[in-house]
Length: 474
Image (cartoon, one colour):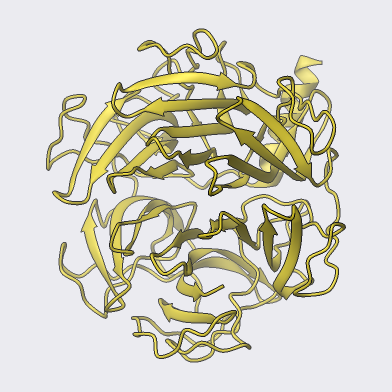
């Protein structure tokens, strides 16, 4: 099942609201890095052509020939060794652009530059194997899915929630609210909470309980395209996405949840328990208990060095309209308040780039969804690409400084729908450039390098899915 496009989502939203009211040269494999200078992109692995099928090799065995298939909307995390992991997504399986949903698990060794297929199936659209709830087993495996939400906890374990997925029955993919934990030390999955049936097979509404009160009966509704953070106490945080509210209506959400891995309990912290909730912006730069971002999906976020949660853009909805956002928000866990800090409270705002490399109070990225973001060691935020309203893809790189509350256009182009410039695999260059893309997967390694994998690219030759891996050192 392909993930619904932005235009499809907007048409769905409009209907609900009305009712309510080619290619460059090929290559595969990987290369060890010969140069990693700052402010340069390095193409490290994968192909420079679209829609490449995966090369799996033997499960558990690394090889320079191995490579995940081209994909978008995959989940990823980096482990305590700085190695990169990727799970599932919308995968190209034939080399000609046909895609299905995967549940394959991969690890990339930063030290040797090789991919290893670690689990899941080479065959797409697999049902989940749930086993017994909260009991790890080598046979357990989440069903194939895309646009899931993922975290890494303080112990290095990987957590996966919902997405558009195949459930234990496996007939078709739809939104889910199952929560899984993966232990990379022993390679086992554990089904923790939530349903083993998706929204086609069972009730998918959220059970909110009382705001701020943990309860074993609480559960976010089935959803996809949410945002996630892990705080210093090891709690998991979930915001919004597209899914089911407290009465079973489907739409964009603005609810904020926390999950305690020790107690296995969800808490509804902030936002509305109904879909398509409007935002309350208040005054820019001023925290207030009434403030809340409007319902949205496909935003980007990060957590700063003080443990505050940050959220930027996405597709937003209110009671009468829908569009792309470029608003920037901060949530203080300590005070339980949102603050609107930058960008517009209206849809489809244009970017203000200013001078490349120079921060300015007037600078701001244009409204977008499906961008890729990283948080650095200083707690600042970096963002690349994404999709604007109308379908064109950005190719710009931005940095946001928490201390100065200013954006800097760091690199890339102010133009959209540009092809990548790969250069020589393993060699950084100022002319290298990942090109316009959206729905990529990203990681930060132990050396504060930013990694970008795959996604969908659109340029003057057309569009397709990618399996290229890039490294950027800020």
